[in-house]
Image (cartoon, rainbow, N blue to C red; front, side, top):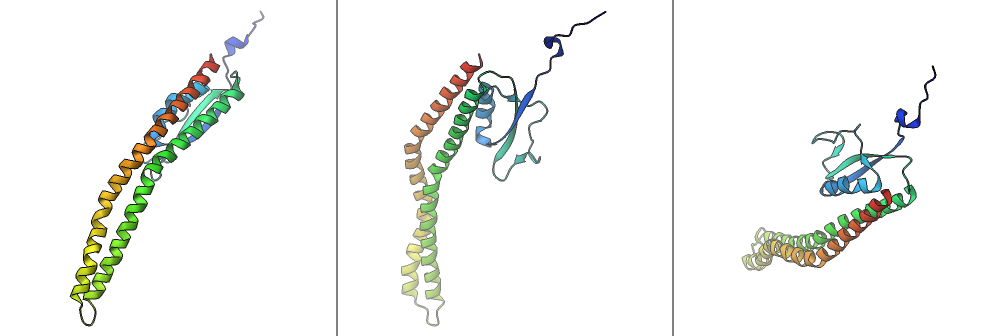
Length: 187
């Protein structure tokens, strides 16, 4: 008796694999979006738990593992769209950092200047002949240099956030349109 085995009964699917490091705040976005490019979470890799070697807690990133059928149609276009998606994620991360970086730099600069005034005040009072007038004169801007950075940081962060939020919204819209295009290619 002869048995004919068709390709449908074998059920073998060749996969290609992808390992990607994603900032923790974008894990859900990537897990929701990568299936649009034909990727599915790799069942052979369990999600990393806190303290595991897969989770890089110091940089707040996590490694995600995906797999995709090697014989997927429109692979070149899907790969191009996926690269565009990955660059959008990198740009989102840069925009988020651009909100806080100028505020941090300005607050630190004012704080350092305040510290310099406090150092001058300390040297004025600990000199051979203490100069209390100079000490008070230098201590006032020193204390102000320690207090002002709190308010400076908040104000600059608020202004910068108002400038950057529309750009972040546009970037999310771009991500959604890329995912829609990729999803249409899979059908």
